Image 1: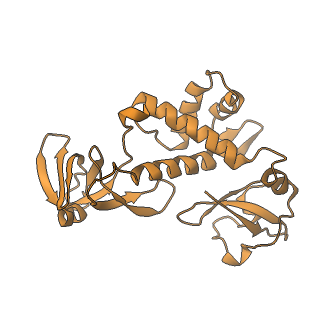
Image 2: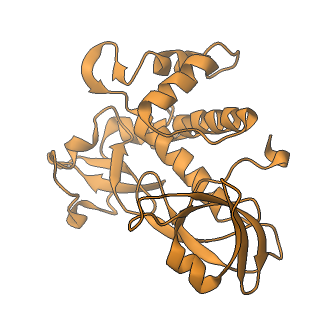
Image 3: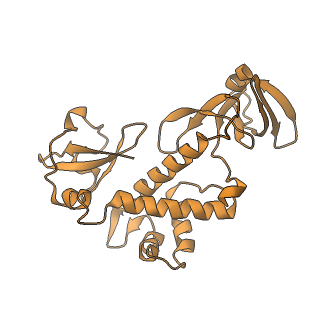
Length: 241
């Protein structure tokens, strides 16, 4: 997640929180939401990015450490959610309802984040304002996406390089290496069958992978690009559980 200063509609300079891969403005550090800078259904005008110092009191307090920073709080929440998912043996669904259910389960645990999880577990909407989206949700999603992207980019040292597309949940795609144990999805645009394959061997010339129904085959690097649509989020490795 990137942090850059942006100028609001009224001239106030805020700290904006951005998607690192798409440049999308997620939210502002202060209590105002992103619509203080962009109007509904409007893209961010690059001219609103600025090197001018912050003039928003809320953004200044958080950026200077005088108040809790929402991005830091979201990072702490994302770390706990991902660790919880790893213990269960699979990555977390990143939609708001799945996150809410995760917070329901986590809220019963002890820890300094418990009050935050209890609030998040009440749902997407702020209980005091039914039409205000809970601001931490998109920030937590963004940190989870960053963590899962980093996981997708990492393979054991010495693994021959065979690349495939990885689509980030919150936008943007990157080319990532394939490692043993990764799961690849067959391109089903023509056939309608989006079969999943598990990588068994990675060689300099390609991979050996097996489908969920047991079909095993060797795929060259060109075959990987031709037949597979993307790599899914990697299942937790034993050392991470």
